[in-house]
Amino acid sequence: MMRMWALPILLVLCGSAAATGLVRKERPGEAVALLAAFLLLAAANSPLIFPKSIGALEAQRRSADDGRPVVFWRPGCAYCLRLRIRLGRSARRMHWVDIWRDPAGAAAVRAANDGNETVPTVVVAGRPHVNPDPAWVREQLRRSA
Image (cartoon, rainbow, N blue to C red; front, side, top):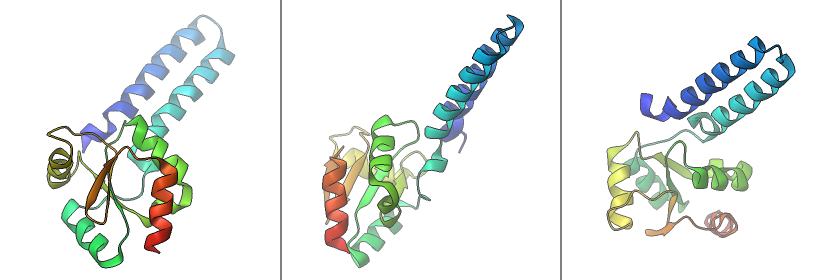
């Protein structure tokens, strides 16, 4: 659990330290701007921006029932964030598995990627696709609806 919050916490701490230094140098405007930037980075890298994760086995079962894709991701992954943001509201219709929280999910990603935990890995109809184009994923979602 702590592992997924490590990067956002580190960003907040670093931003706070840098902002404190600027306040001490009597540059409060710059301190506020810097702290805001670090807070935005922390929020973007937190697990809060992603839909609620479920276990890999449950996601695979649900995908078999409804035909929707399964996305294996991890906090702090820029490519996962890019996919999530570009999918917009439609991302909530997919089944998301955080590989840092689910060992079975991490194992599924390693099996699909020659032993590497490369994310995002999107599984559509039982076939894994590593870091697919968000437009392609959106099209797969439309087909499954």
